[in-house]
Structure formats: C-alpha cells, structure tokens
Image (cartoon, rainbow, N blue to C red; front, top):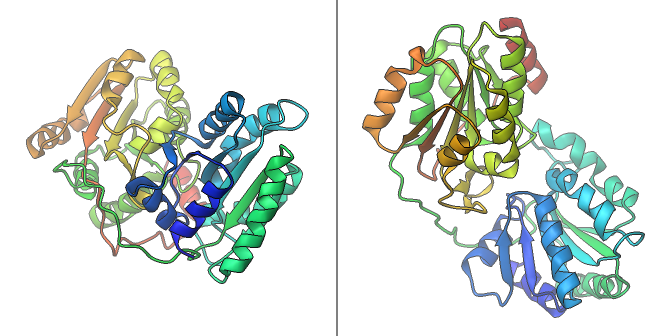
Length: 372
C-alpha cells in the first residue's frame, strides 16, 4: 500500500493527532507524515510512552482519539501508560496504534527482534487490545474492512493495534534529512578506538553505532573483545556502562551513545551525574536523527546534550564539531580522568555496505566478559 492510503484512512476515523517514534518497518509512512502536508498534526516524541500520554491528553481535551506509531520493540515503553491510564478500568481512553512488526515469525531479522517478534501479538492479547496484522498483500478493500472494525472499536472507547509487516509500503523517494554537520560518525569512532587505552572498555548503543564499532574495532585492534555491542534496549547503553564502571573500577568505560537513545531516557544523565563514577566517559554521537531506522529527525533536533549533562552534574564537558576539535579530543583521550561527557556533532549518514556482527549477541557478550 501507499503511505498516503494509510494516512487517509487514519484521517477518516476523525483522528487529527499522530505521534510516535520512527521505525524502519514504517519508514515510508514516517517519511510521508514528516515531509508532506497530510492534514494531520504530527509529533515525533522521545519514547513511546510519551506518545501514549499525548494521545491521552488529546482525548481528554477534545473527545477524539489519537494515533500512536512505534516499532514493536517500543511496546514495552508504552505498556505502563496503556495499562494504568488508557485501560477501560481506569480512564477508558480510545487510541489507534500503528506498530512496525520487527522479528515477525518466519522472517529473518536481528537477534534483538526475534523474541519480541514471537510475543508481539500475545502482548496485545494480554493487554486486551484488538489487533490485526497486515503485509504488502493487503488489498484496498481489505484495508477498508479493517478500518471499519477500527472505527467501531474506537467508538466503544477501546484501543486497536494495526501491526504492519516489513515491506508493506510502496517505496517512496527517500527524504533527505541533512543536518549540516561535517564529521563522519564512523571516522569519529575509528579515532576514538585508535586513541583509547589498551585496557579501556567500550559500550556502544543499539543500531548502526554498534555495527560501526564492531567493524572499526576488528579493523584497528583485530578483535572486538573490549566492546559490548548493545544490540537492543535503546536508551540503556549509558546505564549498562555505569553498571560496568562501578564493578570494574580499574577499567575506564567509554559509552558511545546516540542522541535519539540519550533523549529516550534522558533521566539517565541525572542519575549518572549524581553518582559521578570516576571511570566513565560518556560520548553522545549527535546527528539530530534516528539514523539507524531511516534517518528521520529526533523529537528534539538541536537539543544541547552537553548543557544537559552539565546541568546534571557531569564535571567535565566537551562539545566537538570540527576535525580539529576531534583531533584534540582524541589525542588527549588516554589522559582523561573523571566522569566526562562529550557531545560530538556528526553527519546523518552511514555506509550502505556496513556489515553486521558475524558472531551471536551471546558470543560477543561472553568474549567481552572474558576480557574484563
């Protein structure tokens, strides 16, 4: 189907607000609602629970349901407000979910999506939310029939989830979300790996950052045993790094975070700043985008992560935008001591031929643990 078709069906339900977190399975739809005049008010938000909150506020103020979109991995972030706010036994708030179906049974996908893929429909069963799965074979008539069901469900003040499989949308001309930053992220990662100490550890966030860490570490060090590749759990790499730093005090831990991931659970900055671990270097590779799932802008392009870290108590702060600033930071990296935050502005781009780890996630974790 065309992204326009889905947007039109949503509008015909009387929905005016569309909010969520970008997803690669929904890329064509996300590109459309972000770059075209749709007649819908669209908010990209830090996490899926926030989108449910907006949907609740929309209904409470207008009596109209809203639409929340997400990858199925984001269901976990949404469960709390769905069960404790929207459920019929609480505030009885109708809303439509559009969910990208990563790891659908019978399909090949990344390890972090396999288990969630197996239980996605079961979760909605448990939440008592009616749902329907569609793929690229869904006809216009079938879509009309499904949306007739959705209309009835919303009229009865219930929630409905439309779960969409990979390649369900007709391809669109890729939208370009350039940010004007000059540094290449993979080059930045390469420079950090080259200049870090022999016994340093790296914790990298989920998505292409971990894939780039994997490639560059293998290329530069001939192995990746110093690197924990956080293949799932978006937004939690900094807390994993903190946990390691506290229990491996003789090691320095370098967390390579993403701006979308940091924004998703921004409270982590306040916690880490308060705890002030002396052996943690927190680096935010900021491209103002969800580049790993299609490059759409984050909820807050232009947000100053360095200032946020400073306000949260990080004692040493760096902001890096140029090749010269990167070289100075990298050359002094081995000497940095104490809790440090560096915001490095990078272009919204990556190689098309970027590889994926050959080993399983568990194998990589065991090798990392053996290194510690």
